[in-house]
Length: 192
Image 1 (cartoon, rainbow, N blue to C red):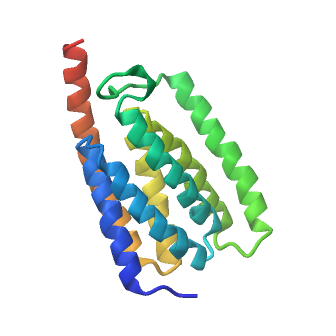
Image 2: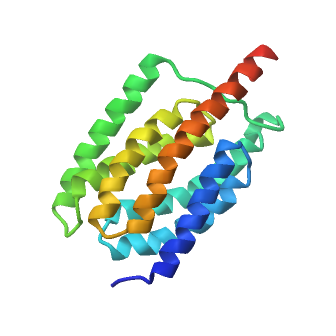
């Protein structure tokens, strides 16, 4: 079942809006994420990218969680500060990505899923990176750099040219995000 390019175009616009707003640390990014996610849920399922489709369900929940966290969550603060993780935490997260990719990649290889190992890697890693964004963990941008680079191949393989181009733009915006969040983090530390 193929979906008109119009729906992919709308999803791309809202996904791009999400990242631009996330770079600017605007809570409105989560609303844009919700719209693009709902559309991509249907598109990816139709392209036999089952893990990417399941990821969209996760993103729906994360849009609500991210919005709540960025509003201060349980802390009562007006805004969640940017934080950083130590190397041991990154080793654990990367190990989780490797194990998750192995488990889901194997499971998806038993189905009609397209590119089950690549699809599983991008999905598992995106779950971790999305959690990092919702918690405003600075290093999320480096994870996304790897995930989005691999995703370009995945989407080109499935004929999703606009989405592949979106992820190419994401690479540029990730660099902008690193610079923007780095400045904000330094200012935050200076005022602490």
